[in-house]
Length: 293
Image 1 (cartoon, rainbow, N blue to C red):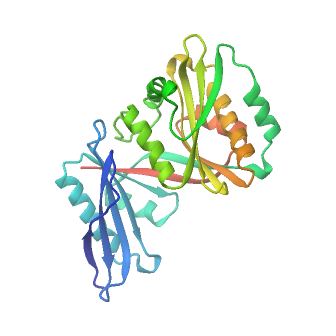
Image 2 (cartoon, rainbow, N blue to C red):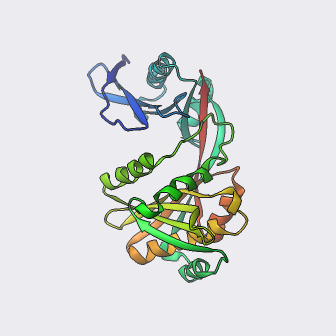
């Protein structure tokens, strides 16, 4: 089969990355596959590219994926990137395709779901109400309130030492502009961003946070984003406390919500224990693969 690879203009730009795209089509011009390469542009990650490649199941094992990969890798090299990362579900075609082409497995992610219909929300509520001396909870919808903005940005450093295995992920540098841009992006998609934070009562600073994104109609599944506690405040159970409060509020505000999704690196036992204790059930495993250029 003759395959043509066409570079496309991708309008999906942003403040932290730009994307390149390629379309694979057969001799009749019918699309059979595509590839997207996200080029991170912010300091700390401007060495990195993220690949999303797919081929129609009926067209696999005919060289289409290899041609798309060659185009994407060549573009990453030309742009001066050091690493290309991508994901493949365990046992999927990509899980065999990537190692054969020089990618190495650098991280294992376990995806889990909390089905709200069967969850013990009474126990979750009790966890969220349990006192944590020296701390209090606060929450908001959408972008961070102005009076908490500075300390919320500082709390993002709780993610700096997030376990990433051997991934050359770099450092995500958060400032107020990025925090507000992320909230605006969620709103633009028609979704709702809900944030719960733990506040240190000694000085009013945010010690940790957890974020949840819910579909705008309040149906389907919500998706947990980041959860982190600053190192000076760890060991007090704040992570489970905040996540329990987030679950409780989501169930109360969105009674038609089906469940909550999250993913956790296998080398992050603390967060895995939290998810297990709250009733999250594993759904599948995904591997992070990396190609060093």
